[in-house]
Length: 329
Ligand code: PMV
Image (cartoon, rainbow, N blue to C red; front, side, top):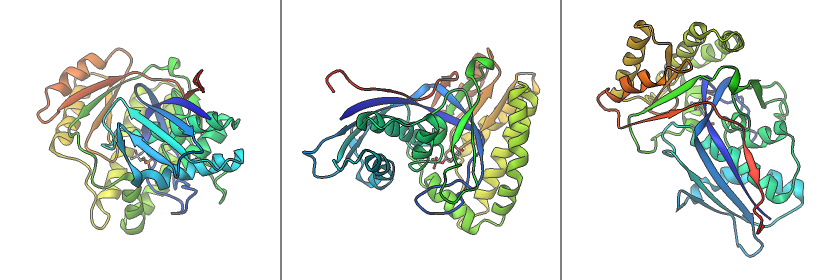
């Protein structure tokens, strides 16, 4: 009853920010569109072991009992389907900074769900896997798939139509990503807490939700037509709208630092100079620059020179989650 899975991080080009309800189903208030990355991943092993007293989670070599409530939401759904009660030992490792706005929960919960399903021999479709992963982390529903991925907010109160699905394969438009890391520490306010606060207190939150279908339509069409200009336009606007709604919350949420803004200016400068690149920023201070195929060297060089940038990561587009049962099983 042991299996491992690797899932890659994803970056939303059209953001998920806000939940339809604050219950355990974790249904998003808005749909989202992301790209799955090939260079940033989580490797997670799940071992259901009758000798354990309770579930145990080790993340990057450290015990993280505070994360177990969320982890159990996914595990209990799968244990229920398998008719198994055994506790699990979960060992997970990210090859990139954890909890700093680099989508570690997306890859982490996608890998956890796939590994646990494989360990329990529960056969799920990719869509079902996406629905279970969503209940650990909304963005994890997208990391089940590779390339360009769309997550549907859904309408049903049971969450059965809130899942992600592939929009276009990575090979159809191999965009490149450069991440400017401006802080290595874990963020102060998790995206989950930030969303709840934005929805409850930001006067701009209803406008953010109302605008989302228009942005999703433009983003979807831009991707399918490989229209970089249109995608850049809608992705930057959508990102700033999300942060605008967060900044207007009480107390305000400001995920950026000075270097984040300096990177944003650098990306705009590059675009004015003819480089096809746009920025996006999640619930953290890192800036993600998305560029057309073959353009990442120039973008990397420019972002490396920005004062306050402590590291620069680069990635192409990657595939969906992969699970394996070890031979020694
Ligand atoms: O999946 P969560 O709960 O970590 O939320 C992700 C939220 C953003 O990264 C800010 C946006 C997104 O769509 O990934």
